[in-house]
Image 1 (cartoon, rainbow, N blue to C red):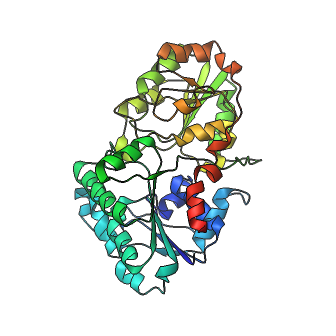
Image 2: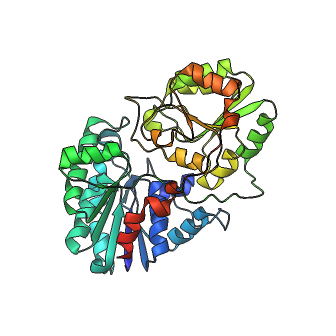
Image 3: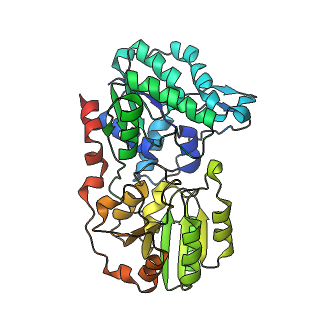
Length: 391
């Protein structure tokens, strides 16, 4: 493979601002380990109203996965369509992205890309026109369908239909098409009469960093001293969180500190959840932190939790945070969301609020004992993709 065209949903400008190694960046790491000569990073269409900027400085510890990714992205060719003003940002939202991506074609035609020796990787259905351009030029298309944007609760009808159009086209031209959950696999069979390769989310072996010095960590350690035990959650905060469960837990477990780490999803504002987080004294919300620090926090919690709503508010069926949790061998309690039953012998799964309260207050979690399953690591999860790249 000579070149890799990288068109992620969370682009490098998002990654640079958050430092969170989402699924597509784990995939990028797998590509980089296989060896490529040229990396092209394609960003989302932007305007002055939603502009984000990339900074070359590498702030991550040298031994971290994030540090290596940042170095490789720094050396890559970065391309995105940028315009000063465009009312479609508000009127169409993601539905205007296809036009923005297509505006890059003239720029790309000036690049000396050996298309026959190029792989394009994307998980972004809104870039379908640009992906089709590379296909026609002879590039090999790899598409990874994570988060079904046709059914995503944060998108409007026009956005969902645009995503569906993208999926429909890409399923016809992708040489390698994968997905991250059984639910999405079934959706593809029903909607497009095709059977994607299932690559569930995975993790890399943890790298604990000594001398962690970020404000959130110091705040957490200080607050932790005031309580008998701590229950932690790390992930995106939005409609998927069961705010009623959290409210009951915080009231019925007064000597427990409940810690929430992660960004609020702007398209899934859960006002009730925000009210709970801000009103309870034994709830500590620390905001988002880079994924480079996740395990330093996780290993300092007594219990790791996934208090997600079950049913209509679920999203997908492959909780990445569960695999990160399993990587620590810490006690885990979760609601019965899709994807967790596989590990029922190692974790506590219940939707009953009373069971959650009993598990925490009676310290039943102290009886937890399991071995981190080898199958959650990327080298096993993504074997089909790794073999395909090597071929």
